[in-house]
Structures are given as C-alpha cells and as structure tokens.
Length: 385
Image 1 (tube, rainbow, N blue to C red):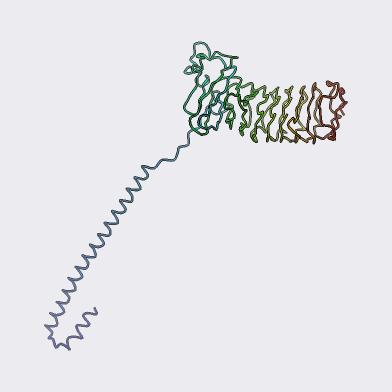
Image 2 (cartoon, one colour):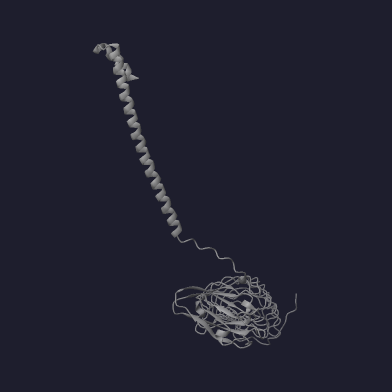
C-alpha cells in the first residue's frame, strides 16, 4: 500500500498521462507478484529441506535408541521362590553359605542317613529331592551313587569326605537335600558364614556341627531364628566362634537335652538368651566356658532338671566378664558344680538359697575367693519360703 501511495505522489512530478501511469502501476504490480511467488517457492523449499532434515534426524535417533535397547543387557529377573526352601516344606533342603577363595575345599559329614525303600532309585524315584543330594553352588552335585552308596542304605554310618574344591573366589550357596539325623563339620568349616535354613532333613543332633577338622566355623555370623523341634543335642555347636552370632536369641530349645560347651571359647558372643527355656536339659556343662564376652541376664532360666553345671562359666584363659545374679535358680537336681565360676572375679549374689543336697562338699574351684559371692550351704536344701 505504501508503494502505490508513492506512485500517486510521483505522477505530477514526472508528468505522466493517465494511461502511462496505469501501465506503470500494472508493471510494478506484476513485478511484485513475480517476486512474491519466487520468495514463496524459496521459503517453501527451505522449510521443506529443514523439515526433511528433522525427519531424518528423528528417524536416526529413534533407530539408534531402538538398537541400544535391543542390545542392552536386561536387568536380572527375580527368580521365583523355590517352595523347597521353606522350612515347613517336606522337601526343603538345608541351606548353607560359604565364602571361599580359589582353591578352598569344603567337606562335611552326614550321619544317620535315612534309608530309601528297597527298589526305589534315590535320585529319580518317588522320593525325588528327599533322597540324599548335595548341590555345592559351583555346578557340582553329589548324590548317594557318587558317594559309593547307591541305595543310601547307610543308616548309622557316616558319609565322610563329601565335598568340593572351588576354583573361584566367591560366596556359594550349598543345598543339602535328603533325610539325615546328624550334620558334622569337616574340611573348610571356617569358610561357613551363614546357615540360611535347616530345612526339613530330620536333624536330631547338632553337636559339633560347626567344628571343623582344622578350625571351627569361626566366621559363622548368621543362623535361622529357629531350630527344628527334632533337635535333642547341641553340644559344642558354636565352639570357638569369633563373630557376633545373630539369630539364636529366640530359639525354642524346649526339646533340647544336652548343651555342653554350646558357646565355649567364643570371643565376642554376648546375645540375649533370657528367653531360652529348656526344661528337658540335664547337662549344660561348659556352656559358656571361655566365652570371654558373655554377660547377659539369665537369672530366670529354668535349670530345675540340670544335673551337671561343670565349668559352666569357667574362664581358663583369663578373667571372665560374667557378673550376673543367679540366686533365683532352682539347682535341686545338681550333682556337680566343679569350676562353675572359675576365674570370674565379678560374680556376685547370695546363693545360700540354692538347693544342693546332691553335692556334699564344696566343689573344686567353684568360684574365686574374695568376690563377695555368698556360696550355697553344701549338702543341704533350704526349705522353700
């Protein structure tokens, strides 16, 4: 519009006639239209080029993303829970965890392996996983046949030297399927770091289960929060352990009869066992002997059936830490208390109310002199208040 106003002002200056002026305006209009058309084509071409390049870039980026996604390692899928690992599942295995270095060997012994009925294949028959089978976690598997006992008919005879040698450093999960009454430590027990499950294997005896040929399970730090109700003996189970064992605090030990040396010579064990109830136990000799750190309140323990208190809190390797008052204990079944508080300088309490009619005279090394402990009146049983 500004161009045509300019032309109207220009007409008087150049002296053009009406016709000449009209032709001039027409020519200028044509030039403008041609220029606009050309500019539009170039603009369209430019935007088309840009759009094409953007489409190409987007397509390339998408292809690269798809390729990356297809080549990427997918996150590991969570394996479905194996029902065989439930403690109440009739086929559940005993599960152990070992931390080893390349070249380490692990062996253990199984005693009182339950018999497989005659004519049944222990590995493929209807007993299935209940037949003796050990998966070592490194791809190796041991079965009855591998151990020279094709029928597992070996009740009462130990399987000795059953094991594997690991070729790589790592943490290995060992699963033991079958039925056996006694698990005993062997070579490499010091590499045992955890018991994940006792399984349903028929355990009745855990005595010395973690005591190895060379060294005990000094690195065992974790055990299940319960033990099988079939267990009757736990003598020396944690003997020599050097870690703060967790998991034992709430064990139901009401069916256990023998616990001699259970925590003996442990260096850091000091778990709260105040809730333990063992009315069937007849011997707890040496249960905390050499347990350098133990000092928990166990004043309410029911020891009414215990006969042997021999070296219960003895500390042969130096002064012990135990300093609890046990005056409320019912010791009426006691027959021996030799070395019961040997080298425990902090022991306190008035034990004059203890019933010790079964021990006629002061036991040898019953307690250190000068501790302030009031000892029982030996050979007597004070009347119940």
